[in-house]
Image (cartoon, rainbow, N blue to C red; front, side, top):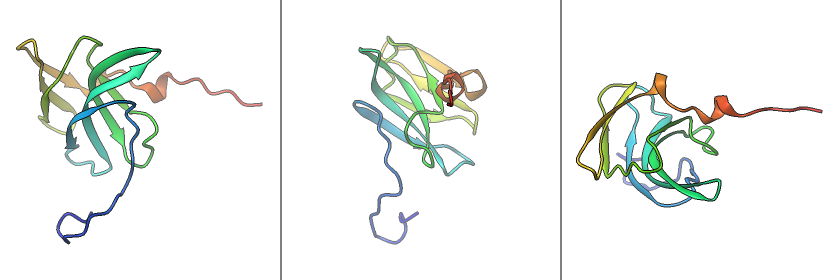
Length: 111
C-alpha cells in the first residue's frame, strides 16, 4: 500500500474487458476490490458490479446485476453486502453469498 508514502505503484492489474466506472476496496479484505462498468461476455456487452481478488486478477470472484443493470455508484454496507443505485432510479442490495461466482462455475479438466 503506497497511498500514504506519496509514491505511485501498481500492485495488481485486473482485466475487466471494457470500461470501469467506480472502484471500492472491500472492507476487512484488503486483497479485494469491487468495480462497476461494462464487460464483454460471449459477444455481448454485460454491465454490473464485479468483485476482484488482486491475488488472482484474471476473473472476478463475484458478479452482481444483469446485462440491463447500469450502476453508476455503489458502496459496501459491510464486508458482505453492496448497496448500489441504478440509472433506472432503483436501489439494489447485493450479497456476496448469493452472487454469481465465476470461479465456482468453471470446469477443470486434466490429462
